[in-house]
Image (cartoon, rainbow, N blue to C red; front, side, top):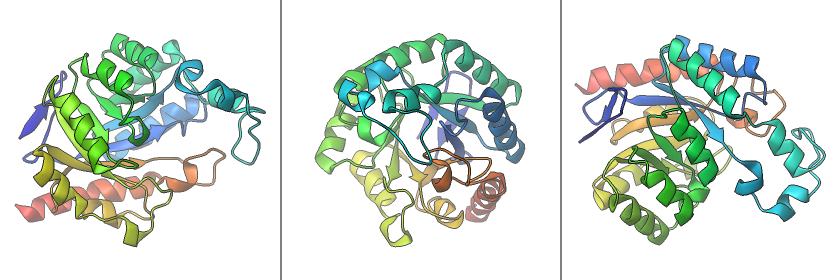
Length: 271
């Protein structure tokens, strides 16, 4: 089983593990930081870099956006100001996607709303990631499915019944789907990772399966490969002590390089 992207790259059980450096908003709204993150990810040989794309006014409840948002990791007095400070506009998206491709690494993103899907389509994104808390967002799922692009679907925060419905919806459009086993706690304790869920997902849904991890360290995520994971995603930062909501649960360039190295060693050893 395999998925071929519109750039010719293939994801599947008989291909090298597709390793994603999840940059998300760890660029802190700064293009120079974003480019440095891409440079470092490309240097260690990842398959792709992933961002997050949001139309803030559409993606979040207005009452939430109006609430005060203070603390060490805040970039604004309200949640609206904080989220807007971390977002790239269409021109910045074009710039960082172009930079990524020039570095030989594939860029894509997680859309949080339909407007963001439209923006990413204008950038010819090769695939989409659906986050854990959007698995039940049928409007967003339909918009992404209608693009006919492959989908990585995170399974954190979902019940089996919710996941069944999402998989059924996506499969009514196409079969280019990878389910990502995920535990949505930051960081995830070792005993909560439950890597055997990878086997369960493969058996239940008959689709490709990967792993999106939030645990400490670099060893557990590559242990997913012998269990059948063909995709690994980890949050990535230049410095885990930086200001921002996701840096502390991310890995730095040295750790990312070790994940790539270990993945290739395991693939070679599996034969």
